Amino acid sequence: MEQRDPEWYAARIGRATSTCAKVIINPRATKPGRDSLIGELVSEIATANYKDVPDSFWLRHGRELEPQALAWFEMWTGNTVIPGTFQVSKKHDLLGDSPDGVVGFHEGT
Image 1 (cartoon, rainbow, N blue to C red):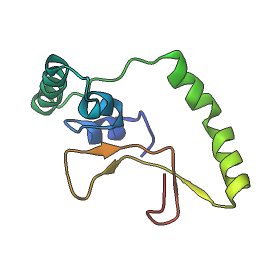
Image 2 (tube, one colour; image 1 turned 90 degrees about the horizontal axis):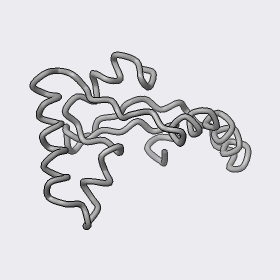
Image 3 (cartoon, rainbow, N blue to C red; image 1 turned 30 degrees about the vertical axis):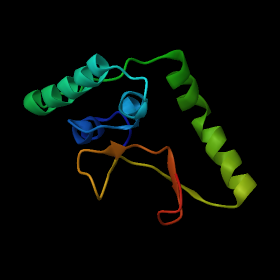
Image 4 (spheres, rainbow, N blue to C red; image 1 turned 45 degrees about the horizontal axis):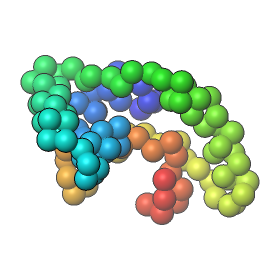
């Protein structure tokens, strides 16, 4: 599954991902902010529609440089990077993430 394809969006519905981690783990996050996130996740489940994160300069910049960064990483470490796909936590079904790449068998992302 490619990032940003329909299957990828469907897999993210109702799951807390790294995109919303800043609200979940930030001790300064406000209760209204957390309540809003919970409301969005519940809404996604109820409507089966995923609310996309608005594209930004830094997201585009990261996507453009990603192939170079992965190539440098492989050259520097000697590790092969396997393209990442959306992964659902084995312990918590409502958590998921889309690593840019995976190294080894559960050794790193």
